Length: 256
Image (cartoon, rainbow, N blue to C red; front, top):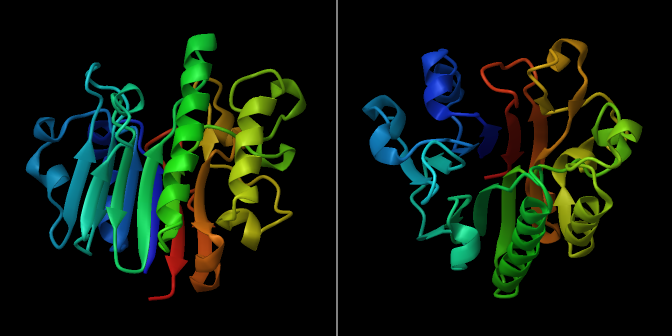
């Protein structure tokens, strides 16, 4: 069972560049897209409906062409959840949850902390609310998978220039501390589980400075699974060769 997560930085832009075909060609069980930047009714049928897939979208309620997430899946869920039922945090269309018999999948576009103290505060509130949300579900006996653009590099190994970014959002101590909380709560960063010492493994590069060509990047896109699901994870891969966005896709495989 394959899961692909990708911040597409505009689903219509990715389609226009021809990279949407890559998504279709992978034939994965789940595609989790972030920063879709569109409402469903703004999308052509080829994007809305992939043959053989159910598709679910959420979008920003107050700002057009901003944020948004989508999931395409071959497996019809038992329940669909948009947001966390917290109006203040749900307005930007950042989370879709799909409930299945064996696990719950969350596709999340976590906020960026740039733009001043208000946005950093929003990001940290979102972080805390999300961890509380999945913990409450996990307590019912459900296994958890969550993926997406977390917008924070956890450790120095996860970005090319840690020293230069110690005071920048995406690598602030308070942002990284939340990822410590996630790990301490029993969730596993799947990529680091398989590749604990691998360097130069990034999922985001700044486009303005041609950082991708020099691999001056950040690993800010993740798959996490609750500890009890880890035994079922077969592999994970960063598709750094795939263009079309300032992020690249990340793929995880679970035993069926």
